[in-house]
Every structure is written in C-alpha cells, then in structure tokens.
Image 1: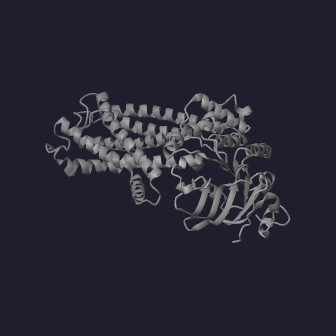
Image 2: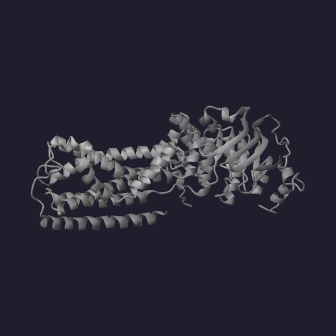
Image 3: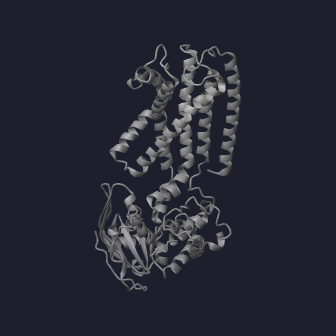
Amino acid sequence: MTTPMQTNSDNGSQNTPVIEISDLKVRYGDSPALNGISFDVYQNEILGIIGPAQSGKTTLLKVINRTLELTPDTTVEGSVKLDGVDIRTIGDVYGLRRRIGMVLPLPVGLPLSIYDNVAFAPRTAGIRAKSELDEIVERCLQQAALWDEVKDRLDSLGTKLSGGQQQRLTIARALSHQPEILCLDEFSIAVDPVTTMRIEEVLKTLQTEMTILLVTNLVQQAKRLANRTAFFLNGDLIEIDTTDVIFSENPSNQATYDYVNGTFG
Amino acid sequence: MTRPKLRKKIILLSITVIIEIVALIFFWNALKKTDVTNGQASPALGTSGGLPNLLGDLNLILPISFLVILLGIACAFYVEEWLSATNWVRRFIESQVAFLTGIPSLLYGLLAVAVFFGYAGVFKATLQNAEGSALAGTPFQRNTALFYTETLIFILTVMPVAIKTTQTALRSVETPIRESAYALGATQWQVLTKQVVPRAFPRMLAGGCRAMARAFAAAALLVGIYAWSHTMELRGFPDRFMLFLGGALLLSNASSFLTEIYVPASTQHN
C-alpha cells in the first residue's frame, strides 16, 4: 500500500479536524473492504472521495455513522474519532447518527408524505410541536431547493415525486436533524445533469454550515465541488490531497493520474 | 408496477371471485338435494339447524386461528428482526417451518382424527366416557377436547404458514428503507413500527389469509371425508362443507388481492 500524502486543505479549513480516521480496517467475513486507512476531515470542507467500485467508499461512510453494525459478520479495527471522541465508545448510537446526515445512492423516499419524510428524524428525536416541525420542514426543503416545487402538496406521497425531486427530498431529510457532517453516497446516480447541478449549488451553500463527505463516481463532480479529494482503490487510500493537486498533471501517485484521466476505472 | 396494470389485475380477480361465488351457490344447492347424511345429531358441534352448526364451527375456529396466527407473527418478528441468520434457534425454527409448510394440510386433519382423538394420552382422561364414538362424553368434555385438538392442529397447520409469510413480508421491505431510517437516528423499534410494519402489513395480512385458507381447506376435506364415508352422521353437512370450501377459496382470493395491492417503495413516477 502506498503511504498517502497528507496535506492540510487550503480552502478555509485550517482548523482542527472533525473526523480523525486512523488505521481503519474493515472486513466482511473474510473479505477485506478497507485495509488500514488514515486521514482527517476538516471543518467546513467538502472532501471528495473517488475510486472505482469495491474500493471501500460506501463502507467508510457506513463506519462513520455506525450503520455498518447492522450488517452481520463485519469486523472493524482501528479508530474513527468524531470531535476527538472514538465513535465506538459513544453510547447513544442514535444520537450519533443524528449528528451525521446520510444521502444514499438511490433516492429512497420513505413511504410517507413529503412532510412526514422530512419530519421523520425530528419526530424520532422527540420533537412533537407542530409549529416547530413546520419550521424544520420548510427550512430543510428550502435548503434542498425543493420548497417551491412541493410547498402546495406537502401531504402527497414522497415516493411519487420525480427521481431528482426525491433525491432532493432525501437531502432535505438528511438536513432535518441539523447534522454536523453530511455524507453523500453517489447522490447523482439517479438524477439528471440539470438537477445534479442544482444539488451541487445547494451543497456549496451548505458547506458554510457543515462538513461534507462526497463519495462520487463522477470524478468531474469531485473536481467541481471538493476542496480536497481522496482516491480509494481496492480498500486502500492511494492518495489524499487538495483537489487541484489530484487533478493536476502530477499527483503523487501514478494510479491517481490514470484514474482521474480515465485510463482505467 | 404501474397503476393501470394493478387495476386490471384487481378487476380480473374480482371477476374470478364473482364466478367462484356463483359456482359455490350452485354447488351448495346441488349438495343439499343429494345430502344423504343429514340425519342424526351432530357428534361434534351444534345442536340443531344449519346456522348454529356453522356458528359453532366458526366459534371454535376463528378465535383459535386468530391466536395462533398472532403467535406465528410474533415468532416471525422475533426470528427475522432479533436473531442473526446464523443463530441456531433461528436455523431450527426455519428448518421446522420449511418442513411443516411442505406437508399438505389434509394430512394434519387426518392426524387430528387419528392421533389426537383416537389415541393420544392427553385426551384419554377427557374422553374416558368414549364408547363407540371418540366424541362421547359430556358437552364440556367434548368441547375441551375439541379445543385442545383444534389448537394443536392449528399450531401445526396454520402457524408455520403464518411464520413463513410474515418473514417473507418483512424481508420484502427494501433494505434501503431500513438503512435510511436507521441513518436518520431511528431506533430499531421506530424503524419497525414506523417503516417496516406499515409497508409489510398488506403482505402480512395476505399471509394470514393464506394460513387460514389452508386450515379451511383441510377442514373442508375432513368434513367431506367424514360425511361421505358414512362412519358417522354429520348434521348440516352441506352447509359446513360449503363454509370451509368457500372460506378456503375466498381467503385465497383475499390473499391474492392483498399481495397485488403492495407497491414497492422504489417505484418512481418519472
């Protein structure tokens, strides 16, 4: 495994790391998914994570919000610290998950109304007051650039929206519990390019409020959005650096250059 | 699945049900005319007339089946949601369910007659007055024996089907829905009650109907064999036979209906 080059981001993220990952190893049964990766994620940055399939990108996100624990027969070694605290020592796993917003590859509208989709997380956290929920729903839908399109039909089923709208709904839902970190797992797979651009604009705005981990198959998306980019390959972190360096003519690893320039992957 | 397709399926099913009901009524009338067994008092249930017989049958079957199906659903929830796939209790229950659902329900009915009524030691005491008929004794003794027999048979016949169908229904809820709910900070209980059960409910109900249909079919066959073999007289035979036969058919239809109603969450209307 190549030792990844660590650099601090230059884009306003000179502060302390939010997530510190050190020597993280994950195995599904006998097959390894992550082979000892280490890097930090800084406050208010967008960290792009690129790499071909089976390189451990989604697994990494699942480790961070501890949903990997729901998959049987997985082993996790090493440590992931959130604000200096090892996430595995956090007793309130549900509280931890509410600190991390997660957007999955395919838009999964919960089989509820648009309003209830967004109000789901606040309700599970115990918020009952209608006025408070109304406020949260409106704020999140506006943040996800969906409010104007759905404000007159908040009671209709979330699953009946178009693919792009559903994906923005899942972003609104992920924002509803005011996460500190937003993880997006290939969010643009089921979304047309125009909607993707709209969501990307939304993400740039959100960056001022939270840290964003953006797993993407579209290397150009990482180039457009990310302050720093990490390149994963077969469970190894090959390289992490500022996006400018990763997409330059001379990143520190040849595999990175080949991948971002489409020689393979 | 698109809406028009669903509507077409439901219309076709409805037509099938109407044809079935008409056929059943004709069959019922024909059966009544040729009933040679409508003589002596019912050995099992009821005192007189067709309606009390039917009510007596249903009075016995419905509460027990309700309890047994509920128990099956609870068991399926425990196995599917709380035990890991490698847990030996889960493996044992699943292998037994697979075995029991594979056996035709009629065999259980025959088992009921042969084992539980005839020879089982448990009922010897209750049925000690039995002379000539396994169902002799005071009404209380008869009813108690019937209740236990019915419950045991239902546990063997209906419960495995209820467990199996509930498990399938729970598995039919897409993993991303669970994952999304968990990622939003929901507890296992909240995920189950707010997401999984509402989505799995039509299928669970369909499973319950299928389980009941299985019991009704077994009962219809038994009543038929019972009456036609002339070993015992059975009052109100046509009514009872039709109740079970019709019940089995209509419950199967209800099961199909409920399965059709289910629309996967990933359905997008782009």
